[in-house]
Structures are given as structure tokens and as C-alpha cells.
Amino acid sequence: MNPIVVIPARMAATRLPDKPLADIGGLPMIVRALRQAEAAAVGPVVVAAGDQAIVEAVEAAGGRAVLTDPDLPSGSDRVLAALDAVDPEWSHDVVINLQGDMPFVPVETIRALAGLFRDQPGLQMGTLVAPEMSPADRTNPDVVKAVVSLAREAVQGRCLYFTRSTLYGEGPIWRHIGLYGYTRDALAQAYEAAPPTALEKREKLEQLRALELGIEIWAAVVEAPPLSVDNPADLEAARAWARTHP
Image: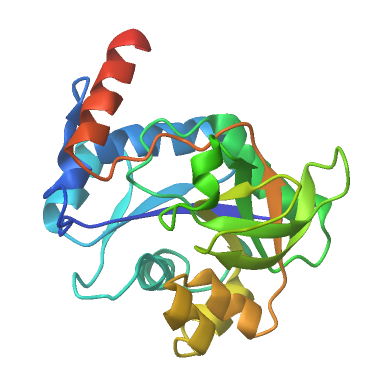
């Protein structure tokens, strides 16, 4: 296994304009995400940037960035474009797709995602789940729930479905964490060769395209979702975290 880590980022966030360059404790948010990916040491790291300003911020911090078309429709498309630029020979067989708006993602979380491909021979696609944080998660459509075939005490399991709908009955609710790993073949098959599928459009969850195409997805369990910055309140929470965790 020879992984590469790609972090897609673009400036055009409606709820928090110029989000990747938002200052968090003296560093742009994208640089903090880059630093966590580098510290995980699962493979080389490249930022798939939708804007020149992001490239400049990453390169000023000593990182590697690739400028991609700002009009690409999704982060997966941005990852594909960056891979075409930095690894046209496909020397990296596994791609770890991190999010640039998770500035403090724990290195153990990144390693757990990469570890799925070591532990599950032939795996095409992996992701992460965490336990529900409150009973309200069960009915919140903004919380994506992963339906996972998971044996008692297991920390890895096969994903059967993802949904925004309410899940009923006894048993744990697994919050989906939007970090992914793919083989290069699966990434190209799902997000380059195939159009959006019916379930993907219905739930507004692009991972359902992979399931509909017959690509098996496994999830690793982690303790908690990383802090994600989606709005000004999240940004203030990230800045407060940076002040107490230098």
C-alpha cells in the first residue's frame, strides 16, 4: 500500500467566505489541516486548491498545493484533478481525502482511516464513524447516519447505507464523518466515470453513488467527530481551541 493524502479546498463557501484562509491562532485554517495530515505520516500530502490564494498560503508554509479549476462541482472532482497533476503514473494506489475545514483532525483519526486498507485486503473505499453525541442526533437531518454491520466490540465494519433520516429501534447510532479513503480505481469509477445516482441525489450524499455502483465501503470507529468549521460560530470555537491547545 502506497497512500497519498489530498486535501481539497476552495474559497467560495457561502456561510463563511474565504474559509480556508481564516486565521486560527496565527495560522490559516488550511495550513492547520495540512500540519495534521503531515503529522499523521501516512503518505505525502497535497492540497487540491480551487484558488491561487490557497496555493500561496500552503506554499508559504512549506506545503505542496495544486491549483485546480474553481468550477469543479465537488471535492472528489478536485481530488481527481490534483491526482492527475501530481501522480499521473498512479504510483499511489490509495487516496486519503481529508477536509480542509477540519483544522484539528487528530492524527489517530487519519491513521485509522488509512489502516482500513491495511486491515481489509481488497478494500475499495473506507470512511469513519463516531458514536452519537446526543439523542437529538437521531432526528437531525444535518447529522448523517451510517448504517454499519458492526460486531460487538469491533472497531471496523461494512457500511450498508447512509441517511439523513431518523433511525428507529434500539442500538447505537453512528455519526458519519466525511473523510474518505479510496483505491485509485474506485475513485475513478465512482466519481469520474459515473454520473450522480438516484439515491445520491435523494439524500444529497455522494458516497451513496459508490454503494449504488457496487463499491463496498468499510468504516473505522473513532471516539468523536473532529471539529468542523462551517460557520462563524464554529470558527470562534476553533480559535478558542487553539488558545488552549497551542
